[in-house]
Image (cartoon, rainbow, N blue to C red; front, side):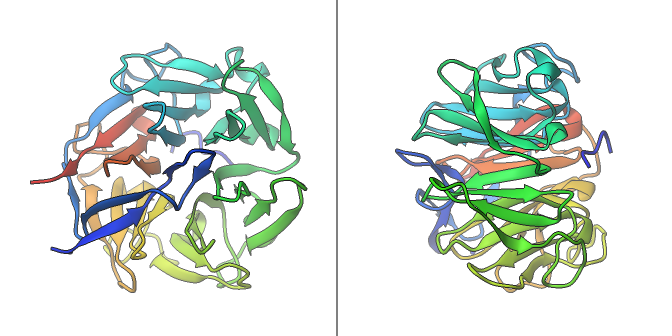
Length: 329
Protein backbone atom coordinates (compact mmCIF):
# COMPACT_ATOMS: atom_id res chain seq x y z
CA UNK A 1 0.00 0.00 0.00
CA UNK A 2 1.03 3.59 -0.53
CA UNK A 3 2.51 5.12 2.59
CA UNK A 4 0.82 8.27 3.69
CA UNK A 5 3.79 9.57 5.77
CA UNK A 6 5.84 7.79 7.16
CA UNK A 7 37.92 5.05 -7.51
CA UNK A 8 41.52 7.71 -10.05
CA UNK A 9 40.29 5.81 -13.09
CA UNK A 10 37.68 7.16 -15.40
CA UNK A 11 34.75 4.96 -16.18
CA UNK A 12 31.48 5.17 -17.98
CA UNK A 13 28.20 4.74 -16.18
CA UNK A 14 24.84 3.90 -17.56
CA UNK A 15 21.95 5.98 -16.45
CA UNK A 16 18.25 6.19 -16.68
CA UNK A 17 18.02 8.78 -19.41
CA UNK A 18 16.80 9.15 -22.94
CA UNK A 19 17.70 8.28 -26.52
CA UNK A 20 16.24 9.55 -29.73
CA UNK A 21 13.22 7.31 -29.67
CA UNK A 22 12.33 6.30 -26.14
CA UNK A 23 13.48 6.02 -22.58
CA UNK A 24 16.23 3.55 -21.88
CA UNK A 25 18.22 2.64 -18.84
CA UNK A 26 21.28 1.65 -20.81
CA UNK A 27 22.46 3.57 -23.86
CA UNK A 28 23.77 6.98 -22.86
CA UNK A 29 27.06 7.03 -21.00
CA UNK A 30 28.58 9.37 -18.46
CA UNK A 31 32.26 9.62 -17.67
CA UNK A 32 33.45 10.34 -14.15
CA UNK A 33 35.82 8.77 -11.60
CA UNK A 34 34.76 5.45 -10.20
CA UNK A 35 34.82 6.95 -6.71
CA UNK A 36 32.92 10.02 -7.85
CA UNK A 37 31.58 12.38 -5.23
CA UNK A 38 28.71 14.80 -5.25
CA UNK A 39 28.42 18.17 -3.55
CA UNK A 40 26.81 17.53 -0.20
CA UNK A 41 24.42 20.47 -0.28
CA UNK A 42 21.59 19.93 -2.69
CA UNK A 43 19.75 22.60 -4.65
CA UNK A 44 15.97 22.51 -4.66
CA UNK A 45 14.84 22.47 -8.28
CA UNK A 46 11.15 21.77 -7.68
CA UNK A 47 8.87 22.29 -4.72
CA UNK A 48 10.32 23.04 -1.32
CA UNK A 49 7.58 25.46 -0.28
CA UNK A 50 5.96 23.09 2.19
CA UNK A 51 3.31 20.66 0.98
CA UNK A 52 0.53 22.09 -1.13
CA UNK A 53 -1.10 22.09 -4.54
CA UNK A 54 0.25 25.37 -5.89
CA UNK A 55 2.31 25.27 -9.06
CA UNK A 56 5.40 25.99 -6.98
CA UNK A 57 4.58 23.19 -4.53
CA UNK A 58 4.58 19.40 -4.29
CA UNK A 59 2.82 17.03 -1.93
CA UNK A 60 4.66 13.80 -1.09
CA UNK A 61 6.15 13.10 -4.53
CA UNK A 62 7.50 9.63 -5.25
CA UNK A 63 8.70 9.30 -8.86
CA UNK A 64 10.84 11.32 -11.27
CA UNK A 65 12.01 11.21 -14.88
CA UNK A 66 14.87 13.48 -15.97
CA UNK A 67 14.47 14.54 -19.61
CA UNK A 68 17.73 16.10 -20.79
CA UNK A 69 16.35 16.62 -24.28
CA UNK A 70 13.53 18.80 -23.00
CA UNK A 71 15.66 20.24 -20.18
CA UNK A 72 12.98 19.33 -17.70
CA UNK A 73 11.97 16.86 -15.04
CA UNK A 74 8.65 15.07 -14.80
CA UNK A 75 7.48 14.42 -11.26
CA UNK A 76 4.86 12.03 -9.96
CA UNK A 77 3.31 14.45 -7.46
CA UNK A 78 1.56 11.66 -5.68
CA UNK A 79 -0.69 13.20 -3.08
CA UNK A 80 -1.68 16.00 -5.45
CA UNK A 81 -2.88 13.35 -7.93
CA UNK A 82 -0.94 14.85 -10.82
CA UNK A 83 2.24 14.72 -12.89
CA UNK A 84 4.05 18.03 -13.23
CA UNK A 85 6.82 19.16 -15.53
CA UNK A 86 9.45 21.53 -14.19
CA UNK A 87 11.82 23.07 -16.71
CA UNK A 88 15.41 23.36 -15.52
CA UNK A 89 15.77 26.54 -13.45
CA UNK A 90 12.04 27.20 -13.45
CA UNK A 91 10.41 28.54 -10.29
CA UNK A 92 7.14 26.69 -10.84
CA UNK A 93 5.85 23.65 -12.67
CA UNK A 94 3.19 22.88 -15.25
CA UNK A 95 0.53 20.22 -14.81
CA UNK A 96 0.91 17.69 -17.62
CA UNK A 97 -1.44 15.02 -16.29
CA UNK A 98 -4.15 15.19 -13.67
CA UNK A 99 -5.23 18.77 -14.09
CA UNK A 100 -8.64 17.85 -12.74
CA UNK A 101 -7.30 16.10 -9.64
CA UNK A 102 -8.26 12.71 -8.28
CA UNK A 103 -11.15 12.28 -10.72
CA UNK A 104 -8.60 12.24 -13.55
CA UNK A 105 -5.45 10.75 -11.98
CA UNK A 106 -5.25 8.91 -8.68
CA UNK A 107 -2.03 8.70 -6.62
CA UNK A 108 0.59 8.46 -9.39
CA UNK A 109 3.76 6.93 -7.97
CA UNK A 110 6.05 6.88 -11.01
CA UNK A 111 6.32 8.30 -14.51
CA UNK A 112 8.45 7.64 -17.55
CA UNK A 113 8.57 9.11 -21.05
CA UNK A 114 7.94 7.12 -24.21
CA UNK A 115 9.56 9.42 -26.76
CA UNK A 116 8.63 7.23 -29.68
CA UNK A 117 4.99 8.02 -29.01
CA UNK A 118 5.55 11.40 -27.34
CA UNK A 119 3.69 10.27 -24.27
CA UNK A 120 4.00 9.74 -20.57
CA UNK A 121 3.47 6.35 -18.97
CA UNK A 122 2.21 6.65 -15.42
CA UNK A 123 1.65 4.26 -12.52
CA UNK A 124 -1.74 5.15 -11.11
CA UNK A 125 -1.63 3.27 -7.83
CA UNK A 126 -5.00 3.84 -6.27
CA UNK A 127 -6.78 2.73 -9.44
CA UNK A 128 -4.39 -0.21 -9.92
CA UNK A 129 -3.53 0.61 -13.51
CA UNK A 130 -0.86 1.97 -15.85
CA UNK A 131 -2.01 4.73 -18.17
CA UNK A 132 -0.66 6.51 -21.22
CA UNK A 133 -0.87 10.30 -21.36
CA UNK A 134 -0.23 12.52 -24.37
CA UNK A 135 2.47 15.15 -23.82
CA UNK A 136 1.05 17.20 -26.65
CA UNK A 137 -2.63 17.33 -25.76
CA UNK A 138 -2.13 16.63 -22.05
CA UNK A 139 -4.99 14.16 -22.17
CA UNK A 140 -5.23 10.50 -21.24
CA UNK A 141 -4.78 8.24 -24.28
CA UNK A 142 -5.86 5.06 -22.58
CA UNK A 143 -5.13 2.36 -20.07
CA UNK A 144 -2.13 0.18 -20.93
CA UNK A 145 -2.42 -2.26 -18.04
CA UNK A 146 -5.48 -3.02 -15.93
CA UNK A 147 -5.74 -4.46 -12.44
CA UNK A 148 -2.17 -4.22 -11.22
CA UNK A 149 -1.01 -2.30 -8.18
CA UNK A 150 2.00 -0.79 -9.87
CA UNK A 151 4.51 1.32 -7.96
CA UNK A 152 7.61 1.85 -10.12
CA UNK A 153 8.18 1.41 -13.83
CA UNK A 154 10.93 1.64 -16.43
CA UNK A 155 11.18 1.08 -20.18
CA UNK A 156 14.06 -0.76 -21.83
CA UNK A 157 15.63 0.00 -25.20
CA UNK A 158 13.25 -2.39 -26.95
CA UNK A 159 10.25 -0.46 -25.73
CA UNK A 160 9.27 -3.18 -23.27
CA UNK A 161 7.83 -1.92 -20.02
CA UNK A 162 8.78 -3.30 -16.59
CA UNK A 163 6.43 -2.67 -13.70
CA UNK A 164 7.04 -3.26 -10.00
CA UNK A 165 3.83 -4.43 -8.42
CA UNK A 166 3.89 -3.49 -4.77
CA UNK A 167 1.08 -5.62 -3.39
CA UNK A 168 1.76 -8.54 -5.73
CA UNK A 169 5.47 -8.71 -4.84
CA UNK A 170 6.72 -9.13 -8.37
CA UNK A 171 8.14 -7.40 -11.42
CA UNK A 172 6.27 -7.93 -14.65
CA UNK A 173 7.38 -7.20 -18.20
CA UNK A 174 4.88 -5.97 -20.74
CA UNK A 175 5.96 -6.62 -24.32
CA UNK A 176 5.68 -3.72 -26.71
CA UNK A 177 3.37 -4.64 -29.54
CA UNK A 178 1.58 -7.76 -28.35
CA UNK A 179 0.78 -6.69 -24.81
CA UNK A 180 1.82 -10.01 -23.28
CA UNK A 181 2.79 -10.23 -19.60
CA UNK A 182 5.65 -12.19 -18.05
CA UNK A 183 6.71 -12.29 -14.41
CA UNK A 184 10.46 -11.62 -14.52
CA UNK A 185 11.18 -11.31 -10.79
CA UNK A 186 9.41 -12.53 -7.68
CA UNK A 187 5.92 -13.91 -7.75
CA UNK A 188 2.46 -13.45 -6.36
CA UNK A 189 3.40 -14.49 -2.81
CA UNK A 190 5.58 -12.38 -0.54
CA UNK A 191 8.68 -13.87 1.09
CA UNK A 192 12.36 -13.40 1.83
CA UNK A 193 13.82 -16.28 -0.19
CA UNK A 194 15.94 -15.56 -3.24
CA UNK A 195 12.95 -16.34 -5.43
CA UNK A 196 10.70 -13.90 -3.59
CA UNK A 197 10.10 -10.19 -3.13
CA UNK A 198 8.18 -8.32 -0.49
CA UNK A 199 6.80 -4.99 -1.70
CA UNK A 200 8.73 -4.35 -4.92
CA UNK A 201 9.02 -0.60 -5.44
CA UNK A 202 11.49 0.92 -7.93
CA UNK A 203 13.49 -0.60 -10.80
CA UNK A 204 16.56 -0.36 -13.00
CA UNK A 205 17.21 -2.47 -16.12
CA UNK A 206 20.77 -2.74 -17.45
CA UNK A 207 22.19 -3.47 -20.93
CA UNK A 208 21.90 -7.22 -20.41
CA UNK A 209 18.27 -6.86 -19.32
CA UNK A 210 19.10 -7.77 -15.76
CA UNK A 211 16.59 -6.25 -13.39
CA UNK A 212 17.48 -4.50 -10.17
CA UNK A 213 14.58 -4.00 -7.80
CA UNK A 214 14.22 -2.38 -4.42
CA UNK A 215 12.79 -5.18 -2.29
CA UNK A 216 11.50 -2.70 0.21
CA UNK A 217 10.04 -4.71 3.05
CA UNK A 218 12.96 -7.15 2.88
CA UNK A 219 15.36 -4.20 3.25
CA UNK A 220 17.51 -5.22 0.31
CA UNK A 221 18.11 -4.67 -3.40
CA UNK A 222 17.85 -7.73 -5.60
CA UNK A 223 19.31 -8.44 -9.03
CA UNK A 224 17.53 -10.82 -11.34
CA UNK A 225 19.47 -11.78 -14.48
CA UNK A 226 17.51 -12.16 -17.69
CA UNK A 227 15.37 -15.32 -17.54
CA UNK A 228 16.59 -16.16 -14.02
CA UNK A 229 14.28 -18.01 -11.65
CA UNK A 230 15.98 -16.66 -8.53
CA UNK A 231 17.68 -13.39 -7.71
CA UNK A 232 20.77 -12.38 -5.80
CA UNK A 233 21.16 -9.79 -3.07
CA UNK A 234 23.35 -6.87 -4.21
CA UNK A 235 22.73 -4.47 -1.33
CA UNK A 236 21.41 -4.78 2.19
CA UNK A 237 20.32 -7.69 4.29
CA UNK A 238 16.99 -8.93 5.47
CA UNK A 239 17.31 -6.96 8.73
CA UNK A 240 16.43 -3.28 8.60
CA UNK A 241 18.86 -0.75 10.04
CA UNK A 242 21.17 2.16 9.38
CA UNK A 243 24.57 0.46 9.70
CA UNK A 244 26.61 0.50 6.48
CA UNK A 245 25.76 -3.14 5.79
CA UNK A 246 22.04 -2.49 6.16
CA UNK A 247 19.19 -0.75 4.40
CA UNK A 248 15.98 0.60 5.86
CA UNK A 249 13.11 0.34 3.39
CA UNK A 250 15.07 1.02 0.18
CA UNK A 251 13.36 2.83 -2.67
CA UNK A 252 15.00 4.29 -5.80
CA UNK A 253 17.82 2.32 -7.40
CA UNK A 254 20.42 3.06 -10.12
CA UNK A 255 23.32 0.93 -11.39
CA UNK A 256 26.52 1.91 -13.22
CA UNK A 257 28.28 -0.20 -15.82
CA UNK A 258 30.69 -1.53 -13.20
CA UNK A 259 27.68 -2.74 -11.24
CA UNK A 260 27.89 -0.29 -8.38
CA UNK A 261 24.39 0.09 -7.02
CA UNK A 262 23.01 3.44 -5.85
CA UNK A 263 20.12 3.21 -3.41
CA UNK A 264 17.74 5.72 -1.89
CA UNK A 265 17.66 4.37 1.66
CA UNK A 266 14.36 5.78 2.76
CA UNK A 267 14.38 5.12 6.50
CA UNK A 268 18.06 6.08 6.75
CA UNK A 269 17.42 9.39 4.96
CA UNK A 270 20.47 8.85 2.78
CA UNK A 271 21.76 7.76 -0.63
CA UNK A 272 24.17 4.81 -0.50
CA UNK A 273 26.51 3.36 -3.11
CA UNK A 274 27.33 -0.35 -2.93
CA UNK A 275 30.31 -1.39 -5.08
CA UNK A 276 30.03 -4.70 -6.86
CA UNK A 277 30.65 -7.54 -4.42
CA UNK A 278 30.85 -5.23 -1.40
CA UNK A 279 29.51 -6.31 1.97
CA UNK A 280 28.59 -2.77 2.96
CA UNK A 281 27.76 0.50 1.32
CA UNK A 282 29.16 4.03 1.32
CA UNK A 283 27.01 7.03 2.13
CA UNK A 284 27.31 9.49 -0.74
CA UNK A 285 24.51 11.90 0.20
CA UNK A 286 22.46 12.59 3.29
CA UNK A 287 22.77 10.43 6.36
CA UNK A 288 22.76 13.54 8.53
CA UNK A 289 19.58 12.59 10.31
CA UNK A 290 16.12 13.34 9.01
CA UNK A 291 15.67 17.01 8.17
CA UNK A 292 15.08 19.76 5.65
CA UNK A 293 18.51 21.39 5.42
CA UNK A 294 20.41 21.34 2.11
CA UNK A 295 22.52 18.39 3.28
CA UNK A 296 19.59 16.42 4.66
CA UNK A 297 16.85 14.21 3.27
CA UNK A 298 13.46 13.14 4.56
CA UNK A 299 12.32 9.74 3.28
CA UNK A 300 13.94 9.90 -0.20
CA UNK A 301 12.26 7.95 -2.97
CA UNK A 302 13.25 7.68 -6.64
CA UNK A 303 16.69 8.84 -7.85
CA UNK A 304 18.00 9.66 -11.33
CA UNK A 305 21.12 10.98 -13.07
CA UNK A 306 21.24 13.58 -15.83
CA UNK A 307 23.79 13.47 -18.63
CA UNK A 308 26.28 15.54 -16.66
CA UNK A 309 26.25 13.05 -13.80
CA UNK A 310 24.27 15.22 -11.43
CA UNK A 311 22.02 13.26 -9.12
CA UNK A 312 18.35 14.06 -8.57
CA UNK A 313 16.54 12.86 -5.46
CA UNK A 314 12.82 12.84 -4.77
CA UNK A 315 12.85 14.13 -1.19
CA UNK A 316 9.38 12.98 -0.37
CA UNK A 317 8.50 14.36 3.04
CA UNK A 318 10.30 17.63 2.35
CA UNK A 319 8.00 17.92 -0.66
CA UNK A 320 10.85 18.82 -2.98
CA UNK A 321 13.26 17.57 -5.65
CA UNK A 322 16.92 17.98 -4.75
CA UNK A 323 19.71 18.19 -7.32
CA UNK A 324 23.20 17.24 -6.12
CA UNK A 325 25.89 18.40 -8.53
CA UNK A 326 28.76 16.13 -9.44
CA UNK A 327 31.82 17.39 -7.55
CA UNK A 328 34.61 17.87 -10.09
CA UNK A 329 37.08 19.33 -7.57
